[in-house]
Image (cartoon, rainbow, N blue to C red; front, side):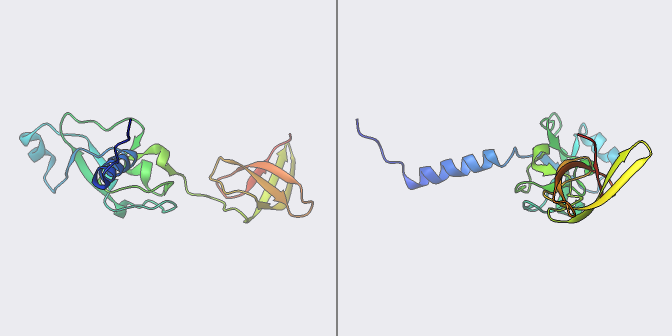
Length: 175
Protein backbone atom coordinates (compact mmCIF):
# COMPACT_ATOMS: atom_id res chain seq x y z
CA UNK A 1 0.00 0.00 0.00
CA UNK A 2 1.39 3.37 -1.00
CA UNK A 3 1.04 6.40 1.30
CA UNK A 4 -0.64 9.42 -0.24
CA UNK A 5 1.38 12.62 0.14
CA UNK A 6 -0.42 15.39 2.03
CA UNK A 7 -0.80 18.53 -0.01
CA UNK A 8 0.77 21.67 1.37
CA UNK A 9 -2.57 23.51 1.61
CA UNK A 10 -4.18 20.60 3.51
CA UNK A 11 -1.24 20.59 5.92
CA UNK A 12 -1.53 24.35 6.48
CA UNK A 13 -5.29 24.08 6.99
CA UNK A 14 -4.79 21.30 9.58
CA UNK A 15 -2.07 23.31 11.36
CA UNK A 16 -4.33 26.38 11.47
CA UNK A 17 -7.21 24.37 12.91
CA UNK A 18 -4.93 22.87 15.56
CA UNK A 19 -3.57 26.32 16.46
CA UNK A 20 -7.06 27.74 16.81
CA UNK A 21 -8.22 24.81 18.97
CA UNK A 22 -5.10 24.98 21.17
CA UNK A 23 -5.40 28.77 21.46
CA UNK A 24 -8.66 28.57 23.39
CA UNK A 25 -12.31 28.77 22.56
CA UNK A 26 -13.60 31.84 20.77
CA UNK A 27 -16.02 34.02 22.67
CA UNK A 28 -19.40 34.00 20.94
CA UNK A 29 -20.21 37.59 21.63
CA UNK A 30 -21.29 40.90 20.37
CA UNK A 31 -19.30 43.95 21.35
CA UNK A 32 -20.91 46.10 24.00
CA UNK A 33 -21.97 49.53 22.89
CA UNK A 34 -22.99 52.52 24.93
CA UNK A 35 -26.63 51.41 25.02
CA UNK A 36 -28.36 51.60 28.34
CA UNK A 37 -29.42 48.42 30.10
CA UNK A 38 -33.08 49.27 29.45
CA UNK A 39 -32.48 49.50 25.69
CA UNK A 40 -30.69 46.15 25.64
CA UNK A 41 -33.44 44.53 27.73
CA UNK A 42 -36.14 45.84 25.42
CA UNK A 43 -34.39 44.51 22.30
CA UNK A 44 -33.47 41.03 23.51
CA UNK A 45 -32.74 39.09 26.69
CA UNK A 46 -29.46 40.35 28.15
CA UNK A 47 -26.46 38.06 27.75
CA UNK A 48 -23.57 37.59 30.15
CA UNK A 49 -20.94 40.39 30.06
CA UNK A 50 -17.33 39.14 29.94
CA UNK A 51 -13.84 40.51 29.32
CA UNK A 52 -11.61 39.12 26.56
CA UNK A 53 -8.26 40.33 25.14
CA UNK A 54 -8.50 43.13 22.59
CA UNK A 55 -4.91 42.49 21.44
CA UNK A 56 -2.29 39.76 21.77
CA UNK A 57 -1.03 39.46 25.36
CA UNK A 58 2.38 37.79 25.52
CA UNK A 59 3.73 35.40 28.20
CA UNK A 60 5.16 37.28 31.17
CA UNK A 61 3.12 40.40 30.39
CA UNK A 62 1.00 41.92 33.16
CA UNK A 63 -2.67 42.03 32.16
CA UNK A 64 -4.13 45.53 32.31
CA UNK A 65 -7.74 46.49 31.72
CA UNK A 66 -6.64 48.58 28.70
CA UNK A 67 -5.67 45.32 26.93
CA UNK A 68 -9.16 43.85 27.43
CA UNK A 69 -12.52 44.59 25.90
CA UNK A 70 -15.94 44.06 27.35
CA UNK A 71 -18.35 41.98 25.29
CA UNK A 72 -21.85 40.69 25.87
CA UNK A 73 -22.33 37.02 25.08
CA UNK A 74 -25.06 36.13 22.62
CA UNK A 75 -28.19 35.26 24.63
CA UNK A 76 -28.23 31.56 25.43
CA UNK A 77 -24.43 31.29 25.30
CA UNK A 78 -22.48 30.90 28.54
CA UNK A 79 -18.75 31.07 29.15
CA UNK A 80 -17.04 27.70 29.56
CA UNK A 81 -15.90 26.67 33.03
CA UNK A 82 -12.37 27.55 34.18
CA UNK A 83 -12.27 30.81 32.20
CA UNK A 84 -11.38 34.17 33.75
CA UNK A 85 -13.75 36.85 32.46
CA UNK A 86 -14.13 39.43 35.27
CA UNK A 87 -11.88 42.41 36.01
CA UNK A 88 -11.04 41.21 39.54
CA UNK A 89 -9.87 37.85 38.12
CA UNK A 90 -7.61 39.47 35.51
CA UNK A 91 -6.34 42.87 36.70
CA UNK A 92 -2.66 42.70 37.66
CA UNK A 93 -2.29 39.00 36.81
CA UNK A 94 0.51 37.81 34.51
CA UNK A 95 0.00 35.75 31.34
CA UNK A 96 1.69 32.34 31.44
CA UNK A 97 1.17 31.86 27.70
CA UNK A 98 0.08 33.89 24.68
CA UNK A 99 -3.51 35.13 24.99
CA UNK A 100 -5.19 35.78 21.66
CA UNK A 101 -7.70 38.57 20.94
CA UNK A 102 -11.34 37.51 20.89
CA UNK A 103 -10.72 34.33 22.89
CA UNK A 104 -11.59 33.44 26.46
CA UNK A 105 -8.74 33.48 28.98
CA UNK A 106 -8.28 30.12 30.75
CA UNK A 107 -7.57 30.48 34.46
CA UNK A 108 -4.66 28.08 33.95
CA UNK A 109 -3.08 30.60 31.53
CA UNK A 110 -2.67 33.33 34.16
CA UNK A 111 -0.82 33.60 37.46
CA UNK A 112 -0.32 36.09 40.26
CA UNK A 113 2.48 38.60 39.77
CA UNK A 114 5.72 37.61 41.51
CA UNK A 115 6.17 39.39 44.82
CA UNK A 116 9.82 38.29 45.03
CA UNK A 117 12.02 37.61 42.02
CA UNK A 118 14.65 34.89 41.78
CA UNK A 119 18.03 36.10 43.05
CA UNK A 120 16.59 38.93 45.16
CA UNK A 121 17.89 39.69 48.65
CA UNK A 122 15.08 39.24 51.18
CA UNK A 123 14.55 39.27 54.95
CA UNK A 124 13.82 35.83 56.40
CA UNK A 125 12.02 35.49 59.72
CA UNK A 126 11.66 32.52 62.05
CA UNK A 127 8.97 33.15 64.68
CA UNK A 128 8.26 30.72 67.55
CA UNK A 129 6.28 32.06 70.47
CA UNK A 130 8.07 35.19 71.70
CA UNK A 131 11.29 34.35 69.80
CA UNK A 132 11.96 36.05 66.46
CA UNK A 133 15.10 35.37 64.44
CA UNK A 134 15.79 37.34 61.27
CA UNK A 135 18.43 36.85 58.61
CA UNK A 136 19.19 37.96 55.07
CA UNK A 137 18.78 35.42 52.29
CA UNK A 138 18.78 35.19 48.50
CA UNK A 139 15.74 33.69 46.78
CA UNK A 140 16.39 30.63 44.64
CA UNK A 141 13.04 30.89 42.87
CA UNK A 142 10.37 33.55 42.32
CA UNK A 143 7.13 33.55 44.29
CA UNK A 144 3.82 35.25 45.01
CA UNK A 145 2.27 35.86 48.42
CA UNK A 146 1.51 32.49 50.01
CA UNK A 147 3.92 30.48 47.83
CA UNK A 148 6.52 28.25 49.46
CA UNK A 149 9.94 28.95 47.94
CA UNK A 150 13.56 28.04 48.61
CA UNK A 151 16.04 30.65 49.86
CA UNK A 152 19.76 30.51 50.68
CA UNK A 153 20.90 32.06 53.96
CA UNK A 154 23.53 34.65 53.05
CA UNK A 155 25.63 34.01 56.20
CA UNK A 156 25.57 30.22 56.52
CA UNK A 157 24.85 29.16 52.92
CA UNK A 158 22.07 26.82 54.14
CA UNK A 159 19.02 26.39 51.94
CA UNK A 160 15.66 26.94 53.67
CA UNK A 161 12.05 26.70 52.54
CA UNK A 162 9.69 29.46 53.56
CA UNK A 163 6.41 31.13 52.79
CA UNK A 164 6.34 34.44 50.91
CA UNK A 165 4.46 37.00 53.02
CA UNK A 166 2.43 39.92 51.62
CA UNK A 167 5.20 42.41 52.53
CA UNK A 168 7.84 40.49 50.50
CA UNK A 169 9.55 38.86 53.49
CA UNK A 170 9.93 35.10 53.90
CA UNK A 171 8.69 33.26 56.97
CA UNK A 172 10.32 29.92 57.75
CA UNK A 173 9.07 27.40 60.25
CA UNK A 174 10.74 24.63 62.24
CA UNK A 175 11.14 21.48 60.19
